Amino acid sequence: MLYSVIEGNQTGRVFVDHAPTPSVAFVWGNMEYAYLVSNSTQIVSGIAEIVDEIILPTLDKNGMGFLTIFPFGVKPTDVQAWFPQRKPVSFGVNSYEFEPKKFEVLRTQIKPLPPDLELVKLDSRTLAQEVCQGIREDILFCWESLDQFSKLGLGYGMQSQQHGIVCACYAIGYGAKAYHISIWTHPEYRRKGLARQTAIAFLTESLQEGKIIYWINDVPNLASRRLAESLGFVYTGDLATVDIPVRPYQFHLGLAEHFNSYLGLSRQAGELYDMAFSIKAGTPEVYRKAALVWRDAGDFEKEEYYQQKAAA
Image 1 (tube, rainbow, N blue to C red):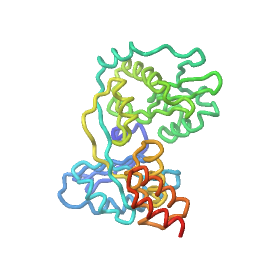
Image 2: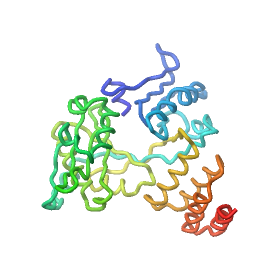
Image 3: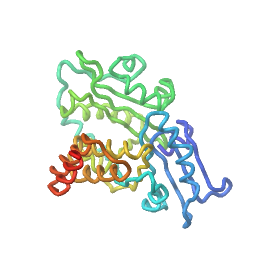
Image 4: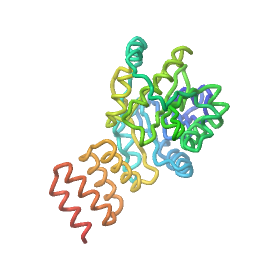
């Protein structure tokens, strides 16, 4: 994503402290990702102003809830300290290296597709399906046009005779000869191995074109990590990130729901509810949700506390 902006493949903005000889650079790709690179030992004073006055209002206008900053040469805790009112969080992301030989072995083990499903290329025709509206909007947001996506990107979908596209793997960025990919699966078709099969089609063509594939996932997202490793990606460590909320209260409530229902991480979800309530008081319904999460986490004192808040 960083190189995609620098190479001009996608729109974005680059901020530096001194154009001729910068010691600090902040690269933003007009979406939820930004990269902060610094060899300065001093606090980067202008970054918070750029984020607060330029980036977050733009993300809010486009319906996005947060900005993820990848800091290099700056401590994540320092970045968090620049935004005390927004209550940033820092979970980090898993990073991987792709091993083509391992992928080739795994690819031979794939099962045949069910008779009602087929692999198709994502293009203007397939993306015109009503079910593809979210994918199409995501691609248009990242690439600005389907022509640009067709020129520099790549995408495959799994098509059902009944529902149309039910799974998709597509590039949301291209730079330094590498794709950054996104995967989506229709809720009714999850846990059937379709994401893996669709990704294999994407990876096969990428390798034939001499492309590198870049994969990251949030550290708590174990399902994404398992999928990556089933495709020949090898975990190499974690990258530090800082998530800056656009609307902090709603952001932490939404993240708490995600951690609880999707990731099954009750304690972390409870801590996110606590953080949300430190910003703004909750409703009885939200307090009850927090109580149930803390019960699942085994903290019955916190459960009782939030049950009382819900009943007050």
